[in-house]
Length: 274
Image 1 (cartoon, helix red, strand yellow):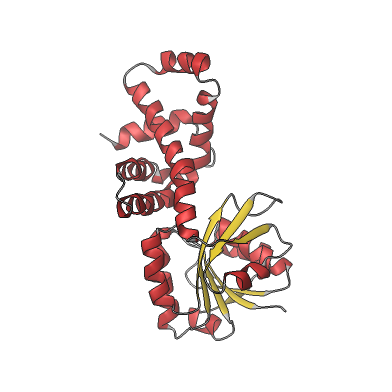
Image 2 (spheres, rainbow, N blue to C red):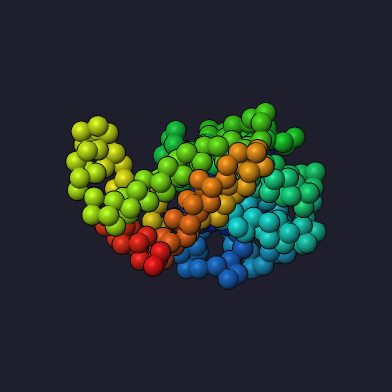
């Protein structure tokens, strides 16, 4: 049966989630107020229905999916709850299990913990939405046969997301920091030469990390803090990802650069530390 769902918000990832839902004939709304022209274009391309206000949208839907930067997840949940919503609330953001627990307290019995792994869902087999909670299977059914591979897990979906991104995004921050360190010491050419001998592929990986993270670093900063908190809550050192958060903080102004190469990232990292 088609469902009525409010998507908050159709960013690059959220728009693809909304498109997958629309492909399964669900009615998907989004709140147009105070959103950018780029967001409006993404929402139109995904065939989402605009609503003028959050309250108007919530009056016409049964469920909510939140896809936003992790720093905003709690405020988004509070605004939805404050408007009197009590249906299924899926938080699909990169947050720690502790933050997810807070979100559950805000959203109530309809809360579903979610974690997205992979790029925006525009090609088969690339994007998985992990779900946990009493309504996880129902939410997974909304995406059946779509480009979003929705999977229910027994563990916390947020914990899985934190563990996965701790390596993928954490290691990208580390390799970029190493390239900046080598440049600052005049050792970059020698390091790249040694990598080509003993770590083939690492030089190209560092260049790919620069291109792949620059436009998204502003979001990764908060995600690294959530990962650091997850490590700390487990009694493990959190400093790795606190430092990664700082790396991405220094890169935040690259958000508008379409193809930031490794040289620009190195320059940005070193200049931001002065």
